[in-house]
Image (cartoon, rainbow, N blue to C red):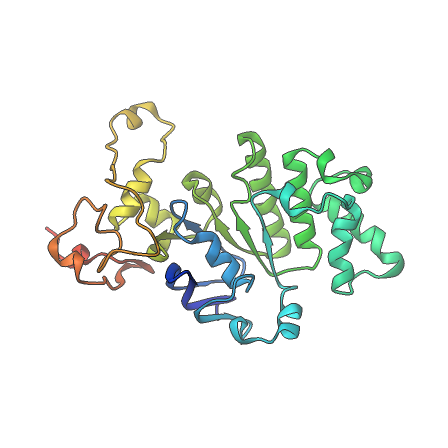
Length: 320
């Protein structure tokens, strides 16, 4: 079975005032139908820009985004608009993504109107069906976004994405602005919807605990590139890249006996600017195991096992 989405050597560079910012610089990955890919990394590593580029909200500088046999990067605007029915996004700030002047019913119904779905007498029942699907009461149809809690507003955002019957949804920090108890409710809702509707997710987050809970595969980004990718059990049990090891060491463990004996991997320095990334391995300026060759060699992807790969030249060294 071919992947639902394939991203090949995706690049997004922003140029202005004589400076080129390489926000995304050569990403390649695929997502199988009905699966969830977790995309993790520090703020500023290019996670959200990757999501926007897949949807063509930001036009890529180079590369291909293959969906259903079509390269979204080369589709004319009319065809791309029709294709967007199948690809939706849920933003981090739900209140900012909802028009404050429109009641909830119209916010959800707008998507139906744009794509010519559920016309006439079928419109209102379909809106109520969608609200019920995300756990919202029908009386909220007349409410405005400012009258909703953060969790309710995020459910409306999910509802609006579902209105056009998508196949792929990009969740861009979809729960990070919510209280912990509400985060769990939204994550459970997303998983229930995936099971019921056969949805495929790209789950963008810096919260490794949530990513572990929701994802099937995990891709770790650093400074515009993916440095490691594997199934979630592999990458959490045996991270290979030193950056991934540092991230995993920061994830709290609920068992106090294990937690007290864990060794944190502390990174030196700050995240370099994507306008002037380091030569060779981009992580070398903060890497605790960097050697002289890291300054000149751009590490290839070393295959470890069962689809697990990482970009670090130290991985080719013989193991005892």
